[in-house]
Length: 170
Image: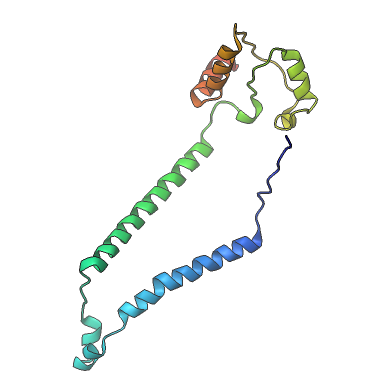
């Protein structure tokens, strides 16, 4: 199996297209219906000079229902986006008590060979943080038990457990 690298850099052509598409759809679906709805009807304009601007049209039936649903869904989306942004900001600024990029958890039958391989940069995901040293070794009777504990340590609760039990807090 080969290693696949993804280029996630900003593409200005895609950004420009996205901005143009956003502005175009805002004009098409927002401004044009608003202009059409604000035009006075010829009969209202003929009745009196001020009547066209003060008359109110009631939107009832399916059209009014669609407007209410659209406004309600828009409000829900704006609130959800705000909560999502707030959560991401809180997670970004929260001190987790460890640097997750510099903690390695793995299962092996030969610890010394595994650490030597990581320090020899044979694994691209761990190469930037060499040299690796061993802080904790836990031995299990079966590989199944070791794999289950590894999976736990890689979870959120497992990170908290490892931080409180394996990391020197002094």
